[in-house]
Image (cartoon, rainbow, N blue to C red; front, side, top):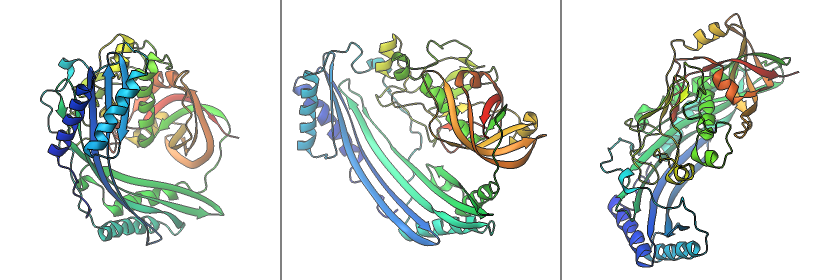
Length: 446
């Protein structure tokens, strides 16, 4: 990326952050914090071999939170000049004066702040020119379309690069931050046979461009996934075992995270209230949070409040060991922060011994789901209903593709009904899990 240099150095961001906190305290705040960040990115997309879009983004911004006792005010700005930052402080103070007191409001306890945060090797700039990005995207799309003559069209291929850095500071004396990067290659193609069309896609994503799959590999996988979906059928409504392919099984872990996150818990809008110490999953399920993986997509030395992250078991042998709490949500629940302000960090589900083929054989007859549509998970009740596509399996082998179906169940039952987890682990994101076999769900079709 030719525009790869940040406009501000780390020291400059730190100086601005300290100034913001000092201004807030000088003008009457009892406590204050700020995060100042800058990001840059480039995205080049091609379609049918021609460049379609070239996008650059360059953002910067600051958020300021002040406390007047238990009253909280927040303001933000995209202008990092001294005048704009001071104005943001004044606006945050004004807001705080007119808000109600909240006994849970305030900075984290000082002894929870990270004192010697490790360098997790999260920043790897990719100095990729537009021409080089276009060549990679073209190679990716060409490889996809070359898989089969029935692949007649393309939604395009893209190559994107992104890097950012930030500093977080508060009036307890914390002032630290780091840089991070994330790059990717993706493509989606369309196949047609007997007047019916199907699409599928593939992508690769990593902090370091050297860890990306080749454009040609990404294209071939996208092409193969599209071809295998041609001539899809509908199913009659039934109850059967269901396998969630690894890339979408991460969504089930995301549903669990949402259900045991502080905001939903203290608002009592979760089907997993008071689940700490309870058997929520089948005994074969263990989930660890590993925030300190070098180069990990979800790695972080501290959370959005400067609280040191923790390596821990979130679920062990199916039993919930911990929630995902910020300082505020923890206080609302009468608990302690878990260092998860801003979300979870590198959740790793312990894999089983079977690959996807092994899971198909274990299931015998049932549904392999490879795509989900819509947002059909109710966090209050646990009811789950999603549009789906995939493959019907008999005697452990894929028989034919299926489309226009809906899968339904309740997340509480689905978690308890996990019969196996594959070793085909999805590693492109912050939630790493293999394909998941659930003993039964309702499949609605004809």
